[in-house]
Length: 485
Image (spheres, rainbow, N blue to C red):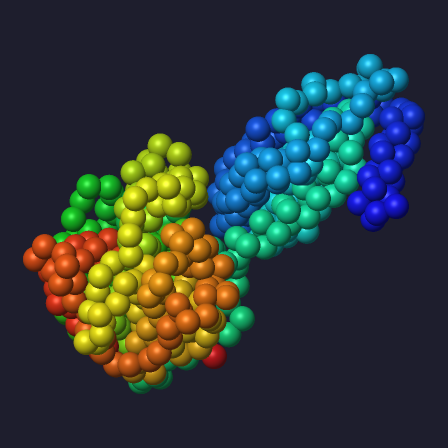
């Protein structure tokens, strides 16, 4: 007897044991819980509750949970069920009182279990135990309910749960955790000792369009009551407002995501004032790399007067603090923004990926440092990144004077799917198609494109620039506040 037949027999016996069991009170609770989890409505409601708490960790937990479900669900329903095509369990002699609605789809793996495990695992990555444990218990109950109501074998549930856990862990590639193990090093400068602890001389610009927290401006006013706080919204010229603020600021504080911080760095450099990053976006890569994760930590960093000088990258007359890229990633960002106002950032990202995979897109014909190449993605990081791949996130230094250049080429036919997956998963196994080096400048031209124009993403914001382009560095050009010690 083959292993597969033995496992199938064991699965059926376990299912029958559950069918024959009678658990007082569960006949009413579990069928209702199973129905509540249809289409992940239960987890959407839990995510909404977490988001409404207004606490940063809870919002991150909700966002990561929904992102994990958006990854797990298509893998299970579009790939797993079609690949295995397992029939649903026989419901002969199954207790009618607890029999659930039998779906028309295949049985293996369980989609409900995948979504439950994905959400619970993702919440556990962000939330404290007092939140993560009840969510995990609810997820476990949903998984068990799928067997108890007769719609899945135990093996279906175990496989779905494993896929859900894996999807939640993959989200850490897309969106790193809230904590920073090692804060990136900057060049220490003379501290500022004569700062007003209440924030006199600080001009803070809050981008209310960043979508992080509508209470950011109020929290800043509370933390630095003497600071001038300027709020901006969607449709306003953010860079112009920042430049106006920097003209009369001793310290320019900027609250928003990485795109907002990028504009703040541009204004601070032009006026020669230090930048106080206030994390108030979705990812906050730059602020987190400095060790700043909350408004309170930013205010404490200001009061400490601890300044460091960090590098900035530059391309087409614009600076970048984290990364600049050409190819697939700018296309994903553009497509995501089409859907984002209606369905939110992470679902929009999933739809954007689907559009890129199914559309008629070809690698770009570029000349990179004098060599003609077919390129899916060209990435330039401000300072060296620690991890491999074309979507790294962690840096140990912010003042090393180099660009971290990574390129995914299509010298031979590299499928578009593999290019996108490589971008997400760290380019594992790309071999000769993945190139990585460091330099202080990078020259790029697009001779095949009319007027040599190229679409770029810079700290998550996209724009079009005429070529040829020179990506360079401004070493230790920007003064920023960071936590002391």
